[in-house]
Length: 115
Image (cartoon, rainbow, N blue to C red):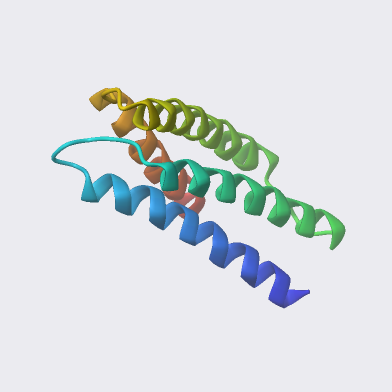
């Protein structure tokens, strides 16, 4: 079971890395990629998996922290979905939308580390 938790943590970190790394890479011409959307989905699934794992094993869970991280991730997910659809249609993605995806993912990682 420890391997499962470590795998979920690893995949969660990979999701953050894809979103933030792509955001940094496209900083001069901000856009949202399909990879950022799927990385947000990966973060949601692995995050819920980690909470479920801790629930099953009687771990101490800070529900306020998890709730805040979930709300932030839902903002990232919705913004990434809107940006991905615009990208697929060939429409320009607004700078604010692109920065919302990357910036909110970075804030989510900061909440995880510092809270």
